[in-house]
Length: 223
Image (cartoon, rainbow, N blue to C red; front, side, top):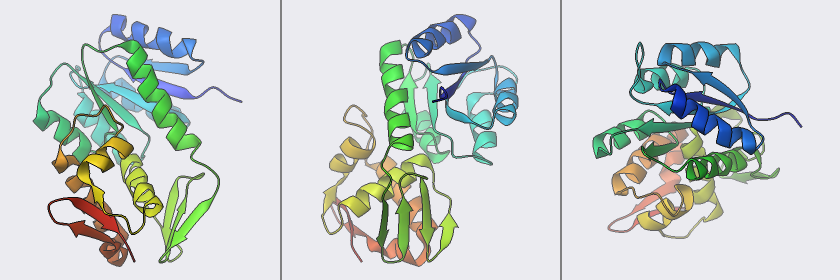
């Protein structure tokens, strides 16, 4: 089996080496870039990149710009690294389709664990398809079709929809959704979920009505 490719983007060579060494130990193939422009170039050159670790503060093109450019063409999972712990930055990251958000300084072991968790969910969610109300969710291909037409979902939108479908008819609190879709150690707030639900409903079109708001609690998926 070919090694999964991870693109590490940071203007600090020391930081790139630290992350690369930990990833290589876990049998990943690592590509590197020292700024946003180079990151986009490398991304276009290698169509099989499985995940991107992207620093925010960089010369030439910062992480936000690089993320916007990549998101125009791909829903590849992206982990953003930042020296800031500003909630506004975190919310912007999720608006742009970032899958995880890690503040510096961080433990390389924790970062690698996040990478592995995302790739497990992306590549090994199972082979079965789930169909409900005209929505077909193909976990192996990571694709969703509605009445036979494929729709584009971000990684987290796909996970959120899968979680809703798995828990059809069950009222889910925002905390429970955060714990299961964003992992137990993600310290986010309700706005993150509400933003993703709003986007998911829009992309599902008429089927978005299946996601019902439970006022003061969270959401329930029911047809």
